[in-house]
Image (cartoon, rainbow, N blue to C red; front, side, top):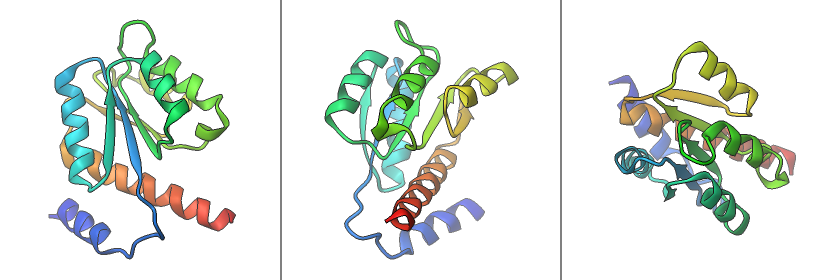
Length: 149
């Protein structure tokens, strides 16, 4: 009940100008990518899903993303490395990053923070938890941007 009332409240908020956020979801497992994009879609937010870090870095250079959801354990470039690389780009230094991962031990949580992430949700996850966090981080980021102007 509490979470559904939060989603209803978020949906009833007045629009923030012409803000039309887009989320980048990166996970090498198709089922996990679909679960993340479904959660983002349920929040009423558009998403782009990719299956690896190098492709995500390229896409992030050509498209602006307002929030990024990453898995940790991916071949080639793991999520910690990807997050660290994104944080070196001026456009993404303050962009909210949420890890959705099966690695939820203390060391992984610490590494996610040290790589620049804002949050970590353990797999398997409740869809509405990610939906609420996506909306919350997007709203906070948008309000911070408006205050800075």
